[in-house]
Image 1 (cartoon, rainbow, N blue to C red):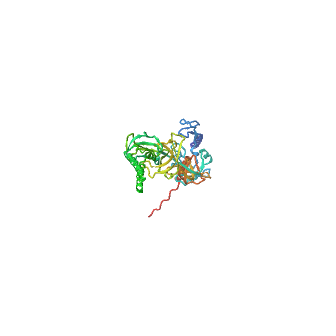
Image 2 (image 1 turned 90 degrees about the vertical axis):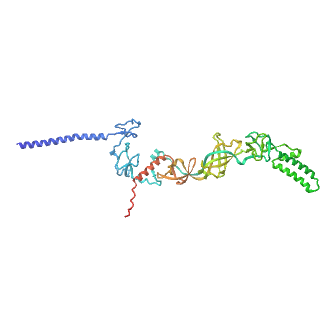
Image 3 (image 1 turned 180 degrees about the vertical axis):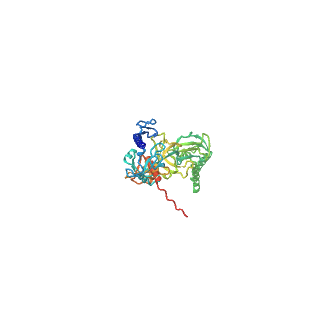
Length: 475
């Protein structure tokens, strides 16, 4: 009896325990389901501040941007073939391509790693080291504003701009000297800067030597007249020779024919003779005053003909290869807008200024009206005609420091980086010396975005490249 009671009690206890366990399990199941539901509930965060998270839509309290849904990490694709048919190799940080992972992750700022596909890596091979080809859809092209232009062949005319200084034409300068010692009796040109014409008197000189020579000439004329009737030919000829010698001495002292004729007509010795200007121009130097004694070695005046002037332009040695004699040049003054003086290069200095690394280039300019004054400074433009050649727009060229790049727009939609060699800088682009052909299309906008994408793909390709095989070890 007692055994049966104990056995029944044990069975009842087991049944109660099973029932209790089942009821507990039934109670926990709904809790687990609710937790899963809460975990799958949508969360929102700021795209610029990932630490700002909310369980409902709204605006970021920091920057005011709209919050965007957060995709759960479990929803990210695994490293397996995707629906598009290409395989994910790994995930990389969007900010630092060198940081990558073999599964979905987040960086220190909370940004999701982006997948890297095998076809992207295969596309990374390019002809320019550090760059790779890029393929963009039409939608993304429109979004980035990608445009392209055709490389054209045209006549290449460029300008070399520099500064120039106006100077007098050395071939039109005249120094005035006297050929005998004398004293200034009268000064006609009494100030510097006065304009004189050829033949105008400059000053009157008294000279004892000149008076003695006049007396000799008058005596020679009398002797010639007296001896002309001699029956001895040598005597008659001697009188004529003596007069001619005295007349020639007066000519050598720059006494004009009119003055000599006046002396012969009057038979009277003149006290002073005028010294005349040999050229027309402005008196730039005056070294004489009234009553001054002058010697043949003294420079009395300097006269400059400024109807034509020189412009000395400083050209850098890097531009010398483009300078040639006879090339056209234009001079402008900043304070005379709308006016220009045109001339030609007449000389290239044989020496270089070591301090400025420039060479003096001389330009002949006509100076009608005398507007150009010596020592004026102006802007000089030298026109260089390079002939025909390829020209690429300057907006298409990226200067990396050690080379210049362009991006070719291929017919199949591929954007390919290309290193080029450029020549002269033109008004609307660069002269192309190598790397491009006529008809190539180059990208002219969004170049820096494409350059960043190309560099990124090249870096990813380098990261996934197989390691080189170890060299065999000699034993």
